[in-house]
Length: 454
Ligand SMILES: Cc1ncc(COP(=O)(O)O)c(C=O)c1O
Image (cartoon, rainbow, N blue to C red; front, side, top):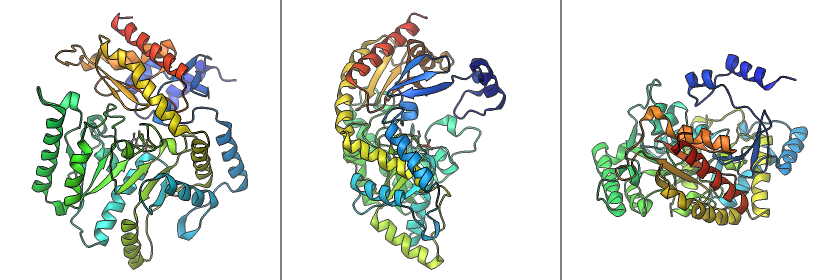
C-alpha cells in the first residue's frame, strides 16, 4: 500500500492543481481525502471532518449514498455509453430531461446536457448568439455580467466571471463582455446610501450601459441569483424586481446561473424562486447529480429552441455537442438523485435546516473578526475585517480567511476561503440540526483561534 507521505510526494511531483496557490502548494503539500459518509469526510490519516462546503457547493445528498452508487453500477453494466449526436438517444437522458421539466420553472423547456457548469454556461453564450442570429438580430453579441460573478473557467465563461485572478495572465475579458457593479451592498454601497438607493444606482448603471452600448448590441445578462464563489452575496432587496423590466424592455435575455443555487440551496428548488426571477434560460450542474458524476444541463425555452431549430435546418445540423453530453451513467445518477430528493422531502428539509443555519450563525456577526455575515438557506458567508466600523480589510498578504479555514480544519470542519476574505459555508442538504450546531461551534472556535493568533 502507498503511504500517505509517498502519495503526497507523488502529488507534488505530478499533479497540476486547479484553483490552487501553486507556490504555496509546494510548501504545504496536499490534503488527501480518502472517504466520506453522510456529511463527514475522512483524510488519509483517518481524521474526521464535517464537510461544511459540500465539496465545491455540490455534494447535496452527502457522501456514500448507496442508492446513487447502485444507480451508476446498474447503468454502467447495462449500457456504459452512448452519444446523443445524430438523433441517437438513451433512456437515462430521456428520463432526466423529462424529470427536469417537472422541476424547472421554464414552461416547455428542453434540456441540453453537458459535463460541467463551465461548459453549460459556455453553451449558453453560444445559444444566445445562435438565437439572435437566427431571428435576424446579428448585432446582439455583448453579454452583461457583474463584478464578483462566477460563471466558470472556459474562455467565454472566465471572461464573464467577475474576479480579477481569473482574468490576469489569461488575456481576459475581451471587449464583448461588460461587467456591471457587483450587487454587494456591504462593499459597494456608498456611505449613507440605503439598500433601496443602492438598487436604484445599480438600475441606473444598467440603463446607462444599455444606452451607451445600444440595446441592439447586447444579447444577454448572466446572473447567479445569489453569488457563490465571488463571496456568497445575496442580491440586495428588490434588485431583480428592478433590473428585470429593464432587461425585458431592451430585449436582453436573462441567463440564470443556478449552478450553486439550484436544487434547494437557498430554501427553494431554485434561486430564481427565492428572488422572484423570471429567467429566459437556466444553467444547472453540481447538485443535479450531488456531484456523484459530472453532469450539467441548460434549460432552453421554446421560443429559443424553435428559432434555433429553424436556423439549424438551413445548415442541416445543430453543430454543437460534447462527446459526453447525456452520458447515460451520469444521467442515470442525476435522475436517481432527483428522485431521492423527491422521495425524502429534501427540499423541505433543506429549507428548514437553512433557517436554522442562519439563526445559529447570527451570533457570529458579533465576533471581532466578522464585518458582515450574510447568506440564505444552507449557504452563508462571513466577511472578515480588520475594523468593523470602517470595514477596512486585513492586508491581503495576511490571508486571514485562509487562516480561518485552516483553523477550522484543525477543529475538524471544512469551510472555504474566498477572495475578499470571505469564509464560506455550504453543507450538504442532508445535514441535521445537531450537525449544524457542530458546524457553527467549530466555525466559532476556528475564528477564535485566528483572533488569538493561535
Ligand atoms: C455559479 C457557478 N457557475 C458556474 C460554475 C462552473 O462550474 P464548473 O466548475 O462545474 O465548471 C460554478 C462553479 O463553482 C459556479 O459556482
